[in-house]
Image (cartoon, rainbow, N blue to C red; front, side, top):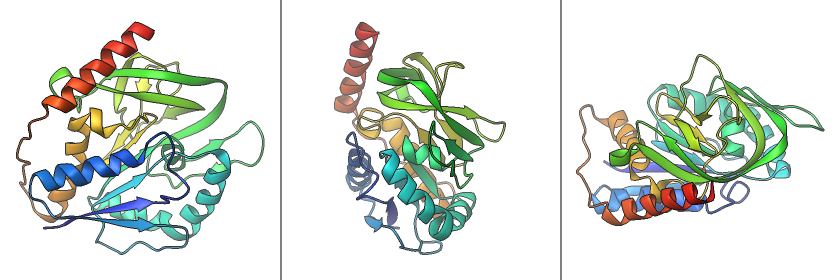
Length: 245
């Protein structure tokens, strides 16, 4: 069983080390002997129906978001929603997270319509949310926490159709008001955490891989890995974040 990863807009939506998430997914599959393939899905590329198990989209600047928004709406969006509803996993970060919601409303310029995977919307805030984040999450592994770095001015608000990925104890999270960070809908995760997220949070990576495998075969369980190094990096990031808070 080959896990296929669809990397959305790698040339446009890839800042703050987001490509490290792809590297982590690939390596954690290889360590378990799971064949893995990465397909780059650039502007204009249509999704191969039923073949992609995990979708990934990183963050980008406003200019890139506008370009990507049109392609999502006209080319990829309906298929992405169908695939996620049929069991595909997804990780979308920052600008990608915003475009997977209902809309992003900037201070200036036209509102960007999202593809509505998440019951969420984003509006421009009047200050930038920058810094390290520590947040409590069911996907946080032994520590029950996830860590990362955020840099966004958008404020995202969740509706009843999705649940938060985590609750922040350090940092701003979705909107610096309600304590939430990110969103989960079925096997799809949206988050503001760069840095990149998955190398320091193996529980989140394995959630995505498990969802991918479950799409092909029921009852699949991942073999455990020795995550001592990853957890050491995680714990170090937590200590640093709390010192600088």
